[in-house]
Length: 66
Length: 303
Length: 254
Image 1 (cartoon, rainbow over the protein chains, first blue to last red):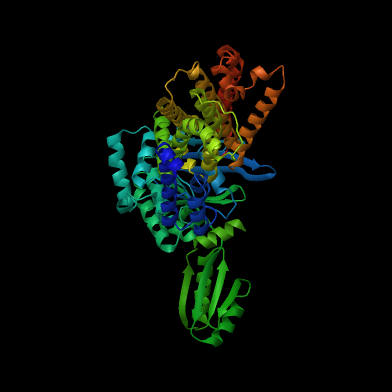
Image 2 (image 1 turned 45 degrees about the vertical axis):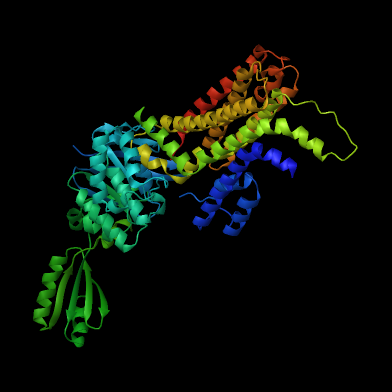
């Protein structure tokens, strides 16, 4: 617990960016019903549980071009 | 001066000779229909006119200037609507027209005025701030026309503008094309003959890589070879008698009381027939010389 | 020229609206933060999680360690993300037919290709130097001693390498109809560079050196001049890729 308290401020920017990516991707997944590949369930899981790479993968391979 | 002049155009893709000497003359301010079956070479011809494809032989002049492949100088006279136009889905119609306007070197004020006008004409005014990505085919087609007309072209080339659309969408496109006719020459390809009859002044039949017929609609109808006459009699028993008298002519029986006569000089036949009818005291319900439909003309030309 | 500017604007609008810009910025920002953090705290973490009784001599981290991380992460993870993002930029437009209307409006093909290249190059530069700036300032918070010799030159070389790879991606994307073309060509160039690095006689000329030997420049084992052959090769290849891309794009029948 001590370790966490010590590292948290340092890691904060990283955590914020990770969260921002995940939230943005999640919102996009939920607001768009069609994807280039995969389906909604898959992308929700990927976006939430695969750190950083997940949201990027979604925007590159999953997001349907308008 | 003709707006478009095409001379001896040939093009082959590998073994396949698509164009075998296409000749076209399109005068100013007319709507010109380029009619042909799928694969007749319509799209290829248009792409060469636009300098998007290189021809093997032959020349193309737009407004008197020679078209060179790869150089798009003559395209300042031309507006082009591809058969299935694709736009950047992340843009709005307004933004897209602004991009096109900047590309052809228009000033901001000019772009704003002209694109407002064209969005109105194409019926996209209410959607001008929506992303193109969500547009229907008909809407994209209409945006395509607006885009093509942006630089006030002397020649508007439309590649099968109505083929992919439902009846409502088709009507909208044809209405727009009819409206722009006063300002620009329109050439459009199609295989839907009723569209041609609705708005074209002149047509050309493209078949198997060559133009087999061209001229104004009236000219084509005059020139064609076989006419049709329909005779409907009142009494069934007269039909046999008349058939005997008409021996030697190309006659077919449509139903119990109706005969269809095909002949080259239909009016001479008509006189003879009327004499026969009078002599034989045959009662006639209807006698009609049928106007050749474009479809008949096309089928005749292709055969 | 007007066409080039208008089309480049469209490119950036596309980056913005298709989330590309945002992703690139966030990824590079993240990498920028990670470098000093992992340099400073990873040794401590390792020590904490060591089984009791075992002891390893881990030297006190210095600011140079942050830059080791920078050159390990940014020209690799960051560049890979960049390459994937830009792998379809030309082939996609060719395949979809979106160029037809703008080209017939009189836009020069050269302008289209240069706009694409400008977009990718600017995106890479912004991301890369953003990462650099974050690493630089975050490191300054962790260490008192902040002087790093030849840092600017070392950073520039890795940037140049990225530019080379991206120009190859665009060239490959022009040659092929799918995403794969750009990735394949960039991969081939990378592989060739790595092979060159292994051969004793020609290793000086391998562009891969620009992104792999940066720390030797900082610690003084190598001088900036030692990178000149590789930098020249990279610059020449990048220019050649641009010229070839334009020439090829000009010949494409649409």
